[in-house]
Image (tube, rainbow, N blue to C red):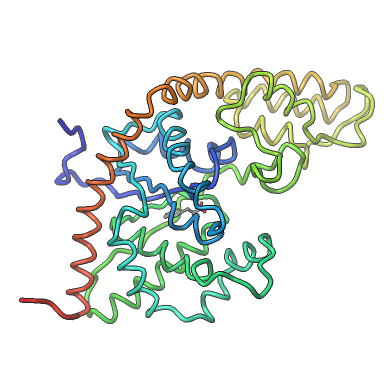
Length: 342
Ligand code: TRP
């Protein structure tokens, strides 16, 4: 029996997703997973395992993209996404998304795609130079298809994705204008209050490929090792010296994970005053992270022993999403006045 909230109850619709290029880490947890767990009971939530989008910069390694569909799904379930209230679905198994993408590509210019700040940054980071896969350049149109196919109005993403949502809304406005009515709703990016989590080395972004990530499957030992090598204040040589908390990764993590804000504030003041060593602060962070990651890791291990259950969740969620997205695709097709058999 489905426990999905009845559609007659007005709940905002959430759609978000992750490229299936690797298991998720603490950056994802802070950036979006935590929000999703909190919002799933007050919203209609759909999560997309974005394997088709993952292929836009991983065409050379489809096996990795495929393998990580199950990994990311396992991460979702392990952090507390409840498949009875959240739809978890596989992007490449939803043909309506591909059909909508092809339509939407006519409502966006190449110049606009090239100007998208997220795309620009990502092209730079991937070192594509002039050899940009067309699928990559066009992924904002595909993401607009993802979002609108579910008629989502709320999209929880990291701040780096905000320009993609902006571009989605531009496409929506153009489509609605062409259709002469509000075929599709605009969406709002929901960006977490704490900014992006830096890597343990102090670099701006946590990323598995950069080797500066803490995975949701990390053991206590791995967490401890990561915290020990965390970037602090390079000028804070003796515990008695005053230390800087700005750019100090250990404090950035405490802000993101420690729920005792009062204690963190006192720790910061003490550190700035002098008299508090890095190790004392690191030990506190270690304990906080063990407390958060431990239960996730255990649930993850149990799920990994039951891949048939995870597959079943995907099958059910994808079937539901297929109906939903096909209905929207048909509405858009008809709304634009394209050919129909009737
Ligand atoms: N582009 C997103 C990322 O890299 C993943 C994604 C794919 C997504 N489709 C989406 C996010 C739809 C939000 C909505 O993280």
